[in-house]
Image (cartoon, rainbow, N blue to C red):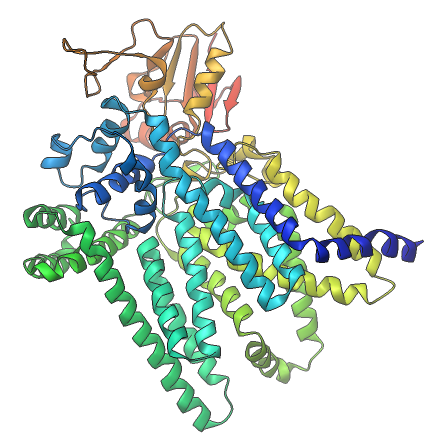
Length: 621
């Protein structure tokens, strides 16, 4: 019966996948596109988009980088391109643009919600290029894995990628996190290809990949020390001293040259973004954003080189990196397992990864790890190192991808910034590749044994649908996805807040919820996010010329169901109140500082609804 099951069910399925692999790959990408597009249409502006979207528009429209310098331009350029073809009004006469230092937030809220622009249309067209980037990368990822490891690994890697709730969530926001995942992976692949074939073409491709990674997210600077370490490991793999010497010159010399070229490419890429930026504006930006006393030497250097026009783009790039390091050192208010602190937690990212990754993938990853340990355990103790080095020589790509995931994860754990899964998003694609290779290898070995071929097939038949179903059932709340360990996204509030649960994505869904419950004729809202509740709940007001009043007073909420509320106002005495999960949890910290009860009464209650798992609705009487 076992053999019958295997040859009648598993073999035809395997043959079908081999013959129709391109159709299957296309279906997987179409599923990712559909899931992400559907979620995108219902997601309101998240916090970071308030800064990124106006920046995206202004970089291309004005050639000016005064907004959001703490993030590089590549992804924002992609988002801003469609906006150039829309008839948009921009607050270029407001103080937030003309005189404020990095007035990104006020500029963003005014641009999206106070100028009479269609905020939802702006968000849709700005987000669409990010989604297209995710799909394009899926095609590249599939082709790369197919050519290197074959159809099975390529399909499984793509399956992991397209049904990852974390990748889906970040594939339709105007942020740098997806771009970091895409271009860091491409840089890693380019490096190994250069290590395998040290040609001039591969050297240039490595330089280009490193440049694009840096233009996508500043955390890509971690590639330089990592690749330096990997270069030395690869050199040490050669037994003959003469080979090691030659390899040292080729690898480390090539990496240094590629790194230098990449910085030049970045420098050139910043030129059109700063060409119209006045020198005094950039000087104010340098002095006003690097306020840490320890940054004074950097300020002096940057303001000095900013006086030379050719160095102005480079100064802007270095300023961005400096701002990121300052931000990481400063930390943030973090809610974790019922505690809240301004310091980081070492277990934050390990637990977050454990809870926001599908259990099926964790099982497969552990199986691959166990298989490797068992294989190593069959050797004598003194052979362990030799076996590992031999394995690295044969599988340089696999080891590099896996090592990068571990390296990036370790740096994140040791850092002082606990903001969400997006900060470790770049580890996922390398892990998808490595686990897919390991899973296919295990499946093929067990398929050759009569005893284990059926159990292995049954295990995959359970785990793979579980992986996909866990994501599909979370639709459209991919940002707040948590696996079954926490009871799903609805139970996430016991452990985490901020962008892993609540980034402001559910305001539109709150509006729909209130509209579908006519018994709610008035509701107080304390909303954490990028959107403006008045834009969706209140009427617009106009001046005597019939123009929209372009500021926060341009809304009439007199007859609205909506009332703005914050915990600092005191204890709410109305019937219904909706509070974002981040504000509900962070209130523990701020109310303790103020010596007020804050939202303690709400945290002791059970909400009547959790809108998208990020906004809690309470009925007080």
